[in-house]
Image 1 (cartoon, one colour):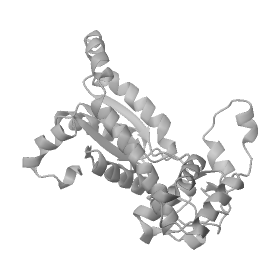
Image 2 (image 1 turned 135 degrees about the horizontal axis):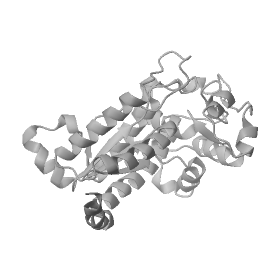
Image 3 (image 1 turned 135 degrees about the vertical axis):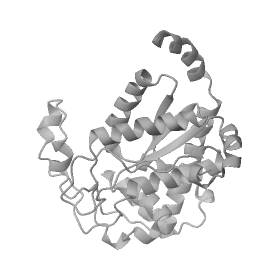
Image 4 (image 1 turned 90 degrees about the vertical axis):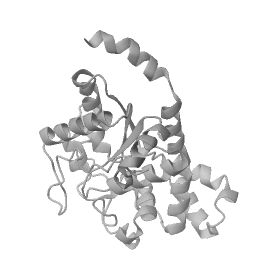
Length: 284
């Protein structure tokens, strides 16, 4: 159930059907290699939320593209918001979602750079408005595990050709790895937004690391320069893999039920509610 598509007369019933769970897809706007659109993170988070909500009904809030993006401004189309702006938007959004009757807010994150920001925000929200319960999850992206499971159940993906299966097996055999504009993101975006893709451009730029900042990691030092310095093309992937609409469909259809199961768990679990009743009075 997409929030903005509901009529006022439908809203209270929608909250009941969702058992008080509202999912907020969040991404950012940035370059995703030479082959995927700027909004890949938001497109994927939104598409996955809506497909999973078809299997396990929740209310899906309008997608947030106010992601944590402090670099890559040299690439056209990148949008960078200040921390203050993002913070105010998230805070007001959570307060308004709660005011409209929801008891649990689940951020469905499609952008790796948002992880620290969302963690810090949800912790701060516990103090600022203890009545709001926020949770975070991400779009699953364990590519090798997904491909292994798909190949192990050919009866579930009869539309895959032998060439498709060979391409997926090649990814596993070569131990390909990715992290940004990678196989996983490319597959999901090719499923949800095929018109925005240029799959014949996957290998047009290098997705390999320059290893320029590897010594920092070896010493346990975190720096935001690491990503930008190691991946100057805003692309992290062993980009010799093959992708088409059938592989994209299989990959996405495999992941959606697992996200639906996450929605179902959050709707049914009572542990957080019980603890909330114990914890809330202590904050006064």
